[in-house]
Length: 501
Image (cartoon, rainbow, N blue to C red; front, side, top):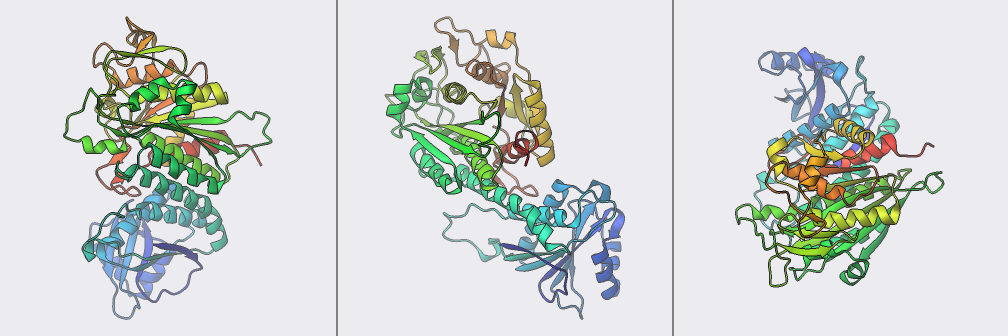
């Protein structure tokens, strides 16, 4: 689908979209169209339940005399509540509707609205962003599909007086959307296509936007001492990998320490010897969503030339049962030197992150470190599919992450850490065990384990197990891989870590 900006002019084909705010208040373009059409918009609204609330759509067959196939009224809600998220939702909802009714081209007129916090150019840019995000499809393996199920919309034109300003506002958003698509593609691929080696190969593509990419193979990992990570992958024929992605966007900064992002990349998780039930195991292809988001975030930062030094480190493994797989009660020496008793091989993500986080803080001395992982089913029990869990050793970092999440619609809910939880992972046979004494506080226990490998670095752990994959459509996220966390972290970087100028 092509999205373009243009100056307002008469639309002579396809669908024309105009905005209506709360209580059926017509925008200037809508009012002009209503007058030109003999009041058809007013009559259509009065005979429907459409009120102009956010997310509402009213489809009208264009009357004789107008060179259009249809008119669509897009609800904007209250004018003083119009923000970036609201306009992104307008764009996404509009694209979904137009594809559903089979339209091929559409034009939306975006007006300057008194009382709205956003100007027309920014409104148009965010409509375009939301429209692009909703247009995502992972359909590369479909060989047959009914025509009526295929997306029909080929072009969306956004009419705005200041085209240059709209394009300027849209450019970084468009690059972020590309990065989100990169993440969604990685997470959506089947496990026979994406496994540690091929995931690493896809990361190498990021050199095109200026990222330095290093791939550590099993021989290098063994020499360095990544033994907890290697223990997870030792039952698979697919060799494990660690990928280090570096973006040096602030080379003249006084504090050159990078911001670090670590991702759990279990490309398929059977549970190992502590094998999962077969029902639902197919979902475990996206147990590498944390790594997929980190890779996409690095693309987003580089593509928009973010003035920040950042490093992304992802641990890539397959957790498979075999004669060579790790066994419950195995004890391994981690990269940190701490010994770990593996009591449950399905609590594997924390073993990957133990080595990855220790390596990252030891090598890069980051100013802050954030890890993302589909770590626990317990977080879904606690928070459902609306929030990700956040656990952290730093209040300021937590506040920054939560506020960034609110701004982009990727919400976080803080869960506690504490000494009592930490004592629960003390092992009788080693320095630490990878599960608690029972199922209580499972999400917190996972984070408590990882915290033992972060030293004193300001650190936050995001458990995204409930939000990495969606079984339903939302305004800007089609069902499937969400890339949850990418927009959040990109926003946090922009708000708190980029150099001025």
